[in-house]
Image (cartoon, rainbow, N blue to C red; front, side, top):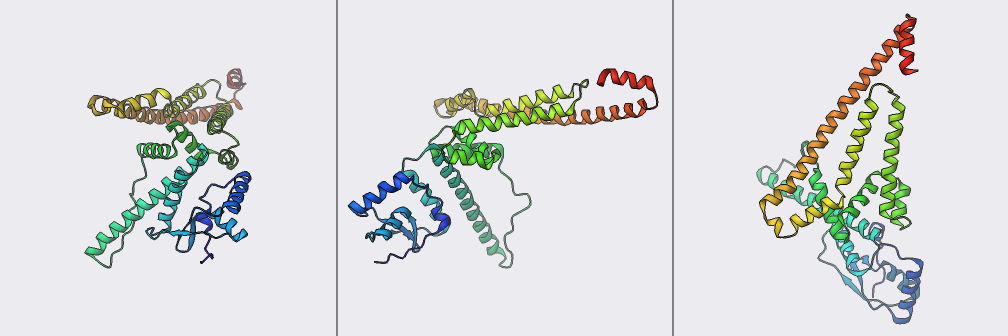
Length: 317
């Protein structure tokens, strides 16, 4: 029997590592009982049973294999491997989310390859010398698509949309240290998400203090705008909104047009508020610039006229 199989490091990294205790138990079981479950291989490469393969080689334990001939590409293999992990192991929430996250990435990549292959075929049928080139106006996913992607990740990992949302924020905005804490189970997803959110608010507070526009009111406006932005972001994870969505879309109510329209209107109103806030924020920044220009002019004039300097000093110190 051939025992010289390839270890693909990229494949191996998709497998959640065993703890030292789990590894010891597995080794003891294989030594005492033999390798009962066959190893899965693809193109002479291990895709399931990396730990068992290493232990069997170490102790000269015989094993059986199953070849997955139906998998065509490495991308197919990666998708299969992640699905296989979900079906075989009791994984921690953090690990399940990490796998679901990767699975969604691979799915999107697979869909893109299929789309490009289809478009290439259509072009090739009309002119063999013309190759498909992605267009400049290829659309990026909208917020609604992002929401659907998070729903898919949450469902795959068997967690709530809130947990998936917080995990995504950590991946997008967290430090490498924060990501590692979550991945290693040293800190909860909710705790790290809260840290990121508080740090973001702290940075915003520092920025506001740095402006030092005592009499203009710009600081107050910016602070309230930021607060509303944060509340809108939190609305994505609020129990009230999630409860409404669940009731409307996952029961008989979801079949009624007026309820579906209500859900749609919630999203539209959020987008409208966000657009208006963005416009307001930009206008306030313009106001801030104008105020600073005015203060600069007064400082210059104050150097010439002591009366102006005294009036300015009274307000701005």
